[in-house]
Image 1 (tube, rainbow, N blue to C red):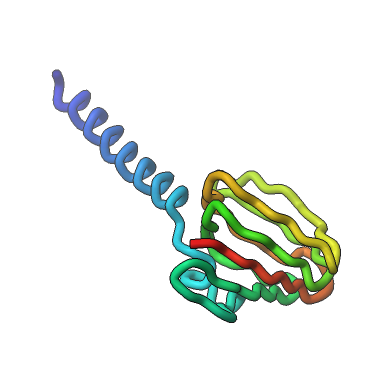
Image 2 (cartoon, helix red, strand yellow):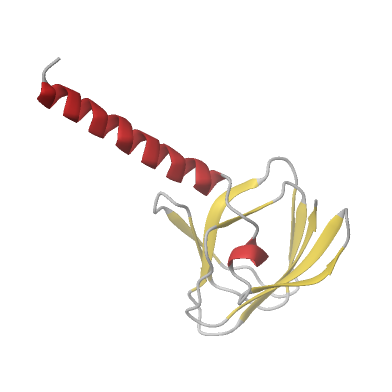
Length: 129
């Protein structure tokens, strides 16, 4: 193996380790209140569950985070949110005030949310630990 090939191979290995670590970290993102306390506030918590209130001002975006498998989201206001993944893909959602969404199964992988609407968006989330 020539020095040039060794250098290229070493560079590729280093990049794969770095990008593999970034992807792994994104999939194992911390909880929302840990990384975005300006948006997520814990209202109640015990060893089995916690209640979180998320409040985004117009244009406000939180940091990449994840959620446990089992949770219920209660929409207190009409919202226009952009949910983005670490790979740059996104989808826009428009939950309505007074509705709820229950999720079970697998934990939600890393994502972040941005209020793309003109009004404050408020959601209460009950998460089972």
